[in-house]
Image (cartoon, rainbow, N blue to C red; front, side, top):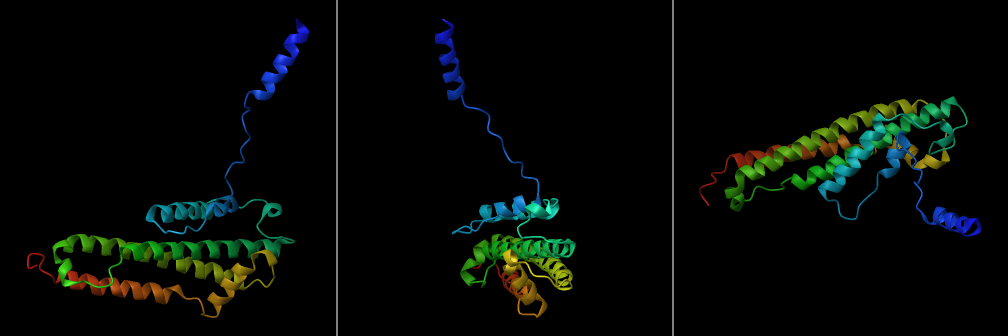
Length: 200
């Protein structure tokens, strides 16, 4: 009897699904890895990416052994963290600009007069998102300035270092783009406000 039971117990032990061990998502690098580009930039997908990157900004860094680049000393570790914050803030700037463009109205056409208030609400949302983008851009510039003071190279995050260089020499400047979008919002809003929605 014992000879029959032993194989049966072993077979059950193998067949019964075991609880899988999960790696907790607690570090900034973990949340950053969840960020991904979508082919179609729907608002809910943009919001998902914003959430991941916001968590990345608020979370502690993993041990330097598990960083996204090789960290040989404290100077590299400091520059790595500054570049990480700069890059994440840049991504948040881009995401808010992209999301705001979904609500932006390029022109106030006369035949949109019956939907004047809906269009004004849409412009308010666009302006709010563009102002968030400006805030993240200012943060990205602050982190970029700190990173630029430290001269050490990390091959694995060359792209972040390129962004740092482009910000510092003025080649990458989201402030001009955001301010242009805010001016356009104000111009189109004024055109909608001047409309009489009952004339069409």
